[in-house]
Amino acid sequence: MKRSIAVLTGAGVSAESGLGTYRDNGGLWDNYDPMEVASAEGWRRNPKLVLNFYNMQRAHLREVQPNEAHRIIAELERDFDVDVITQNVDNLHERAGSTRVLHLHGEVTKVRPENCCNDMDGFSERTVFDVGYGEVHLGDKAPNGAQLRPHIVFFGEAVPKLEAAVERVARADIVLIVGTSLQVYPAASLYRYARPDAPIYLIDPAEIRLHDPRVQHIRMVATEGMREFVLQIKK
Ligand code: OAD
Image 1 (tube, protein in one colour):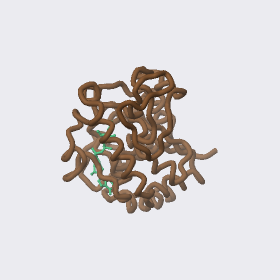
Image 2 (cartoon, rainbow, N blue to C red):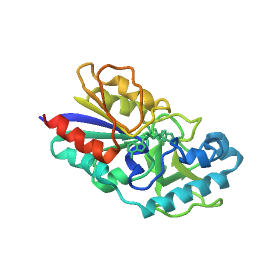
Image 3 (cartoon, protein in one colour):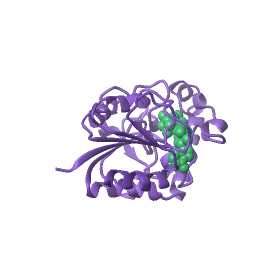
């Protein structure tokens, strides 16, 4: 039987594709106030601003490609049973070939009616539409007549896929964390569900303090770090 790996990724895995991270110097949240463009309150106050922000994200995503880190993660499926659990709303893991990707914070290429399914059972996927890299505007309605909103977990909203993510981490033989500042909860606490015997690897060029002696920090950017990780698990 293949060993299993739960790969927890954040914006850092997509940085070398040209997508900015959120909290690094010059990151998205330096230029935009997340409470304006990515919160439940912001959506109520000014949905047009929020729609425009995600229209811009989609336009940017259309221009970029998966990088070697996404590809190595996808290739791990040859030898391991791999679950990717990403905070990212981009589709670069899927485009690199990963087949099991759970998006904790939603997907920027999708929308859903604003009056529906922001509950704990997973947005009821039936109401979610794929818009690809297209724009969504005020007045664009779902079949139920409601305004379309980004299929994104806004600040101030529950994380419906959390339980499924916890299960995937808890059953993994190896846990790998790539490119996340671990500032946003509950995503940041997921690695704590790792089995006591599971090694935990962390790939991030920045100093990130995790209070777990098992954590092996590969202090490199995602592409280099993934190459190093593959060498280490083959040993
Ligand atoms: P952050 O911007 O908070 O953290 C990015 C991490 O990536 C940092 O630890 C960087 O050191 C690291 N990093 C930068 N360049 C890297 C590279 N080339 N290779 C590897 N790592 C690199 O992003 P997240 O932790 O993903 O939520 O942010 C979590 C959530 O906050 C996001 O999902 C988003 C945001 O608000 C929503 O939009 C709901």
